[in-house]
Image (cartoon, rainbow, N blue to C red; front, side):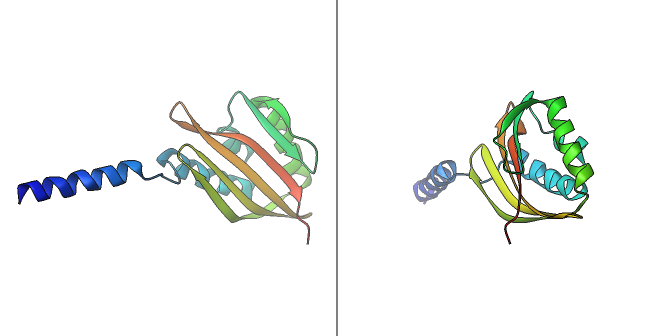
Length: 137
């Protein structure tokens, strides 16, 4: 009986340890905060998830790497021209320490497709890149 119990416990541990976690605990909280911030145009919150350099592509331009301060300015300029109304998640995915989110940002000037990628780095989820493109209707 004890052997059976230990076998079941060992088997359960082996299965759980091999399972891929789609979202880390760090990422789950970060994603929720970023989604809320995108819908509000809250650059301060978004940039709190930037590493020292981040890739940003706005309106079909090739991604460029910006310092955290420069990236804040890029997003501030975008939100000044496009006052956000809401952000709706269309798709999320990833595994282990990386995650992506694709959504629609509704603004006063139209709808944009926003994609951002997170990577766990040193126990914190950081945005590696963001792209913002006009949504094709």
